[in-house]
Image (cartoon, rainbow, N blue to C red; front, side, top):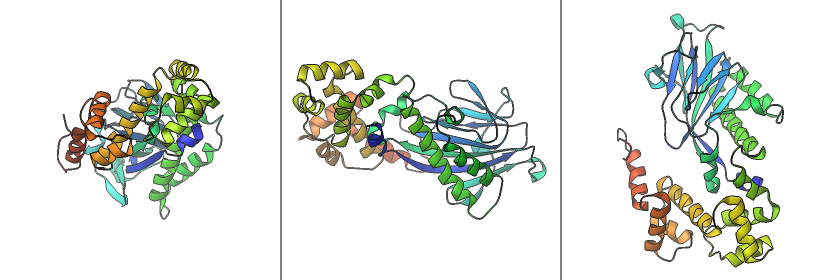
Length: 319
């Protein structure tokens, strides 16, 4: 069931940077709502100061994913003051990839640090609630013993960061996407840390069928009896089991799933509100809007206008 739901996972690379810089240095990355951040160290060591102020030491070949982004920094020393990454001059390499060269005298040496970073829109589709449960920093080195197939990808990234072969920037961007997807899949398969209740529902063969059915067809007019039939149990046994594992009733789970999908469709995909309401099984836009506001905290029109405002160059984010 986990594999079935992960098929909907998508990573959209928005911006990538190859950074070459001479110590001492401190580079700050701002918090971007709804954006993940990936870093790969081609030459190190580099210290990552995470959003929670925890420091991680990264050596050549190490990679991290920050699934919710957040304010963080890459430094040559844990206490080093930082400049914002946007303050550095960047030259275009190809497409969405730029190069920051901040080496002494403009000449990079083997003692200089090299990092390949990617800012990504991280979309788990109907599994979006998992993003909030992920750790702030997901380090790839903790996965290598269990998933040795990641190592050749990291070795390929290390080779590409240190050379200027034709097409290296585009190859690095694609490898960054693949390694990020590996990190997420490994986290899910390893039990998702503290997100045990959600994953327990997926790993329970009978309850997993129910979760998969809801995510496959969220607009269906599901009844408790329908869902109990999917599980192959009585309504009372199903309802008790669902609440015990997920911490919410089936009706609440379905409503939250629908509204989170609607928020993505309306805000990111510009789907008309009435279309989203119809697709999710609501016969009335008013009923849909009430449910949306109850779950998301504001009406669907605010999500749509807020996303449109963010698309305008120079516009501040909505309050």
